[in-house]
Image 1 (cartoon, rainbow, N blue to C red):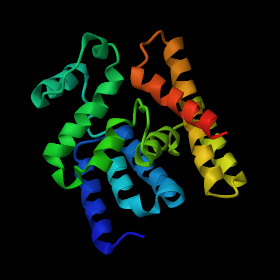
Image 2 (cartoon, one colour):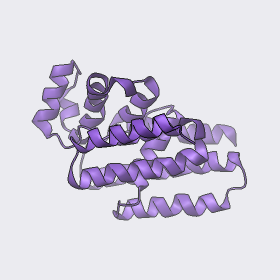
Image 3 (spheres, rainbow, N blue to C red):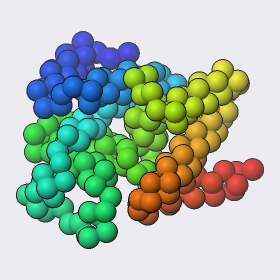
Length: 213
């Protein structure tokens, strides 16, 4: 349970974000906050505050277009390659980190920044916070894409069958692996480059699962 001060801080952050993020993107952002609140109760109750802050901030630069994203990269000294420009949907996770540092410094700790940084691609050896924001972004209740609906149903149906914390951790890993599979298939169908971090995130989870069996 959050303190009164933490609730007030999040309310203030919510108001600031609403001045930057608009329309469906803002609706999605609020959906991610709701979803990560549920997930934090299951997997990280002591981190609800930071996870909700990360949820509110994760798409803070999402509505910036390609040239605006690269301009932010140049402004903050974020290095990018020609290959990166072929994956424009990954830029906002990197630029958001720098915007948080400069415009929302009270929320710029490593836990929040890591969750925001990898909420789109994932990475090898994701922290619990990174996993939860990645999943919340995918399955929040306003998302109606077929894969989002399928993954949401997969997770919550599986959760009903979990007997203990070990089962819940296994379900989280399985759900993330499935999400990466869905993402990779979609990018292949669209003839779009796939970020190396996504491959590594998927493969690492599978390796850990095989090692633990």
